[in-house]
Image (cartoon, rainbow, N blue to C red; front, side, top):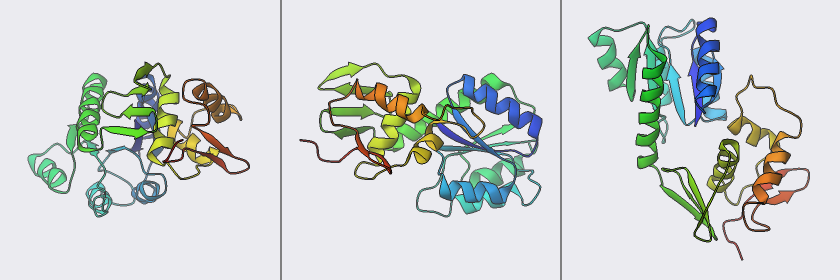
Length: 221
């Protein structure tokens, strides 16, 4: 799952990014409300962890603006504000969960997994293109009715391509979906993942558009 972390406490943010990475989440971090709103538009995450005490604007305003679009984002509010009034305000503005600081990492992970499952149930559960079927709820992939074993990044890459079938996605766009901003990666990381993924899906399923990127066509022959 691709997470946007909005937190101005840099030591806490760094530790959260590392901990979330160990749990299999890809996390991008910003420290201000303005950055959060811009990132939500240009590199839409699947879930947002939002601190309310931001330096440039109130986190509740960020939450309200994030939920003005046609597709509200799942948001877990993470904050030192733990009064009933603050919780009610956050939930009324569209927050899906509320965790007060200080918190236990295990509880945060459990709440994120619950939100992940809940979000999957609200979205299209299966994406089917030709002989390839991806179940977004179970994170399983079948090719011609047989389960295929994919690594986490291969699964994220395939999911991104299938969700955008018919569109050409650049290497930079794909990297943004499967890697956090602060992760070190080799210059040919996407090419390596594509190469390995092609061994597990039908020939020609993933097409290369030279000089542009990669795509999966909605209609396969």
